[in-house]
Image (cartoon, rainbow, N blue to C red; front, side):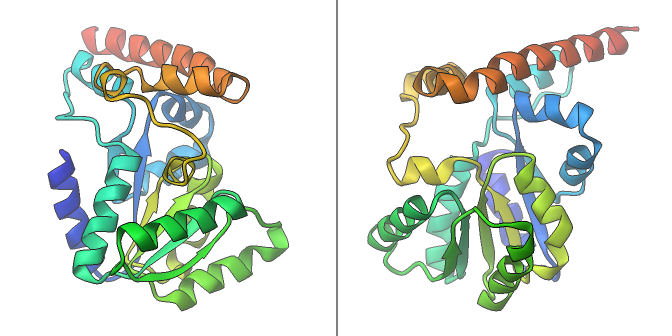
Length: 233
């Protein structure tokens, strides 16, 4: 889907009964899902899937099923904040460090003064605290739940508790809260258009990102190559 088609799909999902789930995929997540069956099942159970990584868009073209465009988690998140403010949808923010989530809330209240913020919480808790986290989200009665936690923790958390969250749509946004809070910078537009945003993040955080991008991208190339050979046969 394009961004506009995705927003229209969100509109329908929020209005539908039950809890729907959105996920974005990139090369690293595809590679992880190949070896992690729980993550793979969690992704395939989602109602809406977008390509966050340009490498996935390129691969789709190579394999003969081209995706129309890249729809990043952070761009969709921003668009959904705008729509939630217009529609009056309460939102719940879950994830990131405590200082980051508070900064995100402060900035949202300035940027979107009419946005209903039903609640928020950092993304760190013990297994014993998890039922309390789920209960807090459910009691907030939000339409949109934004989950900013790393994969596969994010997807597996939602898979365990999806039907108990009492929200219209769960949206995974990865590290987008850090960008919104100003903790990390997003790549310049020219790098985004060239599909090199991953390289910018690698330069920013080499110790944390090198395995995800270099190892994950290498595995992804192997997956695409095998699929390409299989389709040619």
